[in-house]
Amino acid sequence: MKNIKKFIFGAVFSLLFFNCAFAQVSLEFSQVLRPTFSGSLAVTGSAVLQTQNLTVPAGKVWKIVSAQATDVTNQGTFDGPCSASNSAVIKMDNNILTYSNFTSTAIFEPIFPIWIPAGSYSFTFEALQSCSSLSQYSGYMSIVEFTVVP
Image (tube, rainbow, N blue to C red):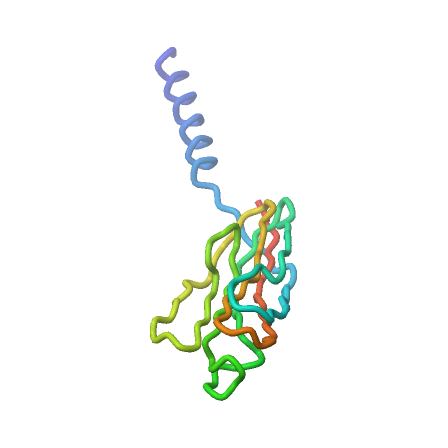
């Protein structure tokens, strides 16, 4: 009788343990977000043009599907005031998400999508300019927000 009770207890415990250990959550679409960045620089050097502190709410996850940063004034051409020698970058907590440099053959290849859990994140939009002409910069991110459903 004792062995049967142990067996039943062990079987029930095992089922509960494996059920909890391998339980999965599902994601339910919530919304699409498109934070934008912009700024200008009129001096040689680098500068943070804009910072956005964004929060992924509790019970949500974000999927960053793309990001782009560009020098709008020169637009990657060699006939702008800075001869297309400017760079623009978007960073998340000091990690590069996307980078554009119009004179280099070395292109930063971001790996999207990037999944980020609930929490607060700092996004910076930076520019590096090699001339003192006024240049306008812009950027964006495309984010899909999901609700975590247990």
